[in-house]
Image 1 (cartoon, helix red, strand yellow):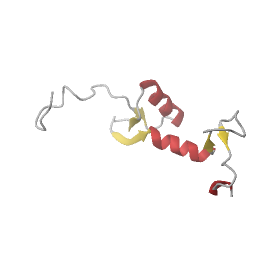
Image 2 (image 1 turned 90 degrees about the horizontal axis):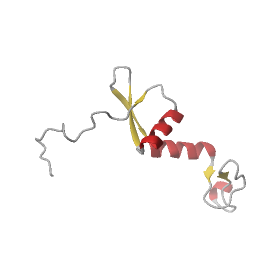
Image 3 (image 1 turned 90 degrees about the vertical axis):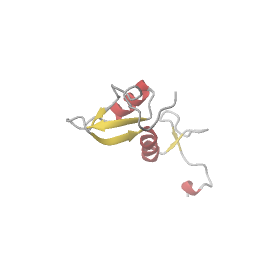
Image 4 (image 1 turned 60 degrees about the vertical axis):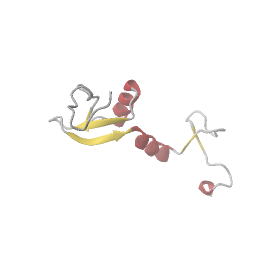
Amino acid sequence: KRKALSDSIEDIYFKNPIVAGEHDSKDDLLHLCSLNKVNQIPIVNSNNQVVDLHILDDFLLDFKLEVGFLCEGECNNSSRGVCEPPLGSKESG
């Protein structure tokens, strides 16, 4: 059923949203995303006020930049799941 802007949101909002504390680790946040199949988690302070928003895609991009290139084909170091850039690419020099 369509809703008008003047309608109450009580029947459509999440009454018990998935949130994380501002001191939770990145591993905790990644686990929450995976466990709950969500891509965003609000970060709340001790007063339960939203202070940030954790976005899974941003975390994965940061991880990819920190670790190197994630395997998309043949890896030089398959035990770590990372590979060197292909020879001749800008990244390989």
